[in-house]
Image (cartoon, rainbow, N blue to C red; front, side):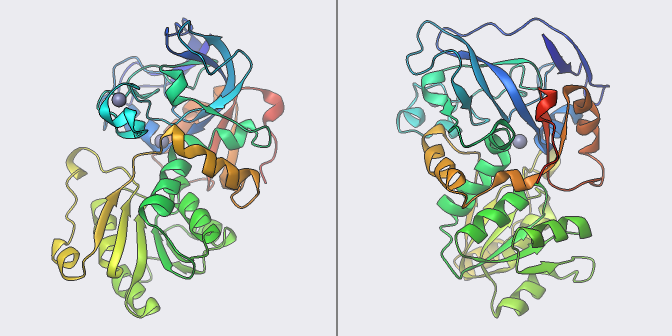
Length: 354
Ligand SMILES: [Zn+2]
Ligand SMILES: [Zn+2]
C-alpha cells in the first residue's frame, strides 16, 4: 500500500510502497478515506515526542472498515468509522469506566505504530475504540475530529463546563484553537480570540469570536483581557502549547476561573511556569485535556449532525497523499493558509472547502 514514511527525525518524509498492516485479532483495519495533518505529527517528526522509526504519521482519520479481527463483535466490513487518537487497552481500570483516552497501556497511530497517512490503518480493541460515523458526517469532517476538535470539545464542554454568556479566552487560533472558538460559541459563550497572525484572527472572527486580540499590539495579554472583561475570563484555553501562553492563559482568568491546557507542552517546555500564586489566591482550576474517549463521541457527532457544530468550516485546505509531506513540513512554518489541512485519499473528495 502507499503511505507517507519518515526514516529519521527531521528527515525527508516521502510517499512509498510499504506492507499493509496486519489486522489485530481484537481490531480492525480501516481503509482511510481522509486524514488530518496535525501539529503533533510535526512534533513527532521533529523528534520532540520520540517515536519508533521509520514511522507513518497520521492520527486523525475517517474511513471504512476493510478487515475485521475474529474477536470483534461490533464492526463489519464497509462500516463508516473514525476513532480517537488515543486507543485504550479495553481491560484496565480506566478503560473499564470508559476513560480509554488516559489508558496507561494506550497506543496511538502515527506515534506508537504506523498511522493513517496511508491507504490502510489498523485499530486495536475495535469494540471499545472505534466510533461509527453518521451518514451525514462526510469523510473530510470525520477526519478533522479525532485529535484537535475532540480535545477542544472535551476541554470546553466537559472540563470548562462553559455556560451561556460566560467569557472564554482562546489563546492560539490554529486547528485546536479554532475548534475551541466554534465549540464555545455553540455553547453561547462570548469568545476572545488571541493570535499573532492576522489571518488566524480573521478566521476566528468568521467562526464567531467576539473580540480579536493581537499580542503584538497588546503585549500584556492577561492585563488586556482583565480590562476587556472587568475581571478576567471565566474559562481560558492554551491551544498552542507554549509556556508563556499557558501562563498568560492562567493569568487572564477571573476568580474561580478554569484554565484548559489543550496545546501540547513537550520536552524542555513540559514544565510550564504556571503562576501558582494566582491559582491559589483566585481559586483557579488547571485542567488538561487529552483527546476524548469513543464513549463521548455520540454527543459531539449529534451536534455536528444537527448543524450546531460544523467542523468542515475549520478545513483550510485539502491535499492528496502526495501533498502530505510538504503539509507536514509546513506545520513548522508560519501558516500559508489557516485552518485544518486534510489529506483526502480519493481525488474526487478534493473540493473547495467551505
Ligand atoms: Zn486501558
Ligand atoms: Zn493531533
